[in-house]
Length: 255
Image (cartoon, rainbow, N blue to C red; front, side, top):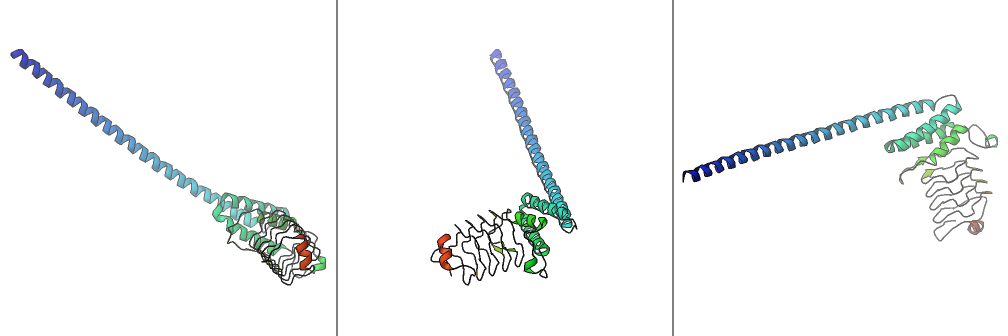
């Protein structure tokens, strides 16, 4: 009987020892989990802080690049101005939120640096200056929101090279684009009212829904151009019949 009691007592002590051991293990595991969780939280907070600092530094760099580029646009050196144009293009690609501002700056640059109104049409250069052409090239490459209006009204850029350009939504009211290369240009919903397009190459250009009211199309190449929905009321230098022979028109094309 005594042996039995001793055996039970020993088993009870062993059970309690194992229970305490399991409790300490559980507590240890719990503290380990808590420490690991705290480490993960600290790591996440550090990562967020690092990312925030990185964004701030990146935005600061873009701001500095933008300031330098816009300052260079006012340089007396044409090559420096052209370089500034391409620097702004890089900024527009690196920062989507600054793209609209870059487009406005480049459009203003073209309006300010094309030949002055005092220069008679007969004395206009055959092609734009290199810095102006660079700005036109970049404007034709940069993606724009569908509602964005690029104001280039009244510019005088005979011989401009803008093949395959994205010109949707551009305002080229009364612009001089004579002898310009606009082959395959996406010029949908563009304002070309009263524009000078004499001898311009508009082959396969997409002019759907654009306004060409009273535009001068003397000698312009419209082969394959999409003029569905376009307004050609009062166009000069060609006839509706001649246009229909070479361009795509439909019942919504107005003559």
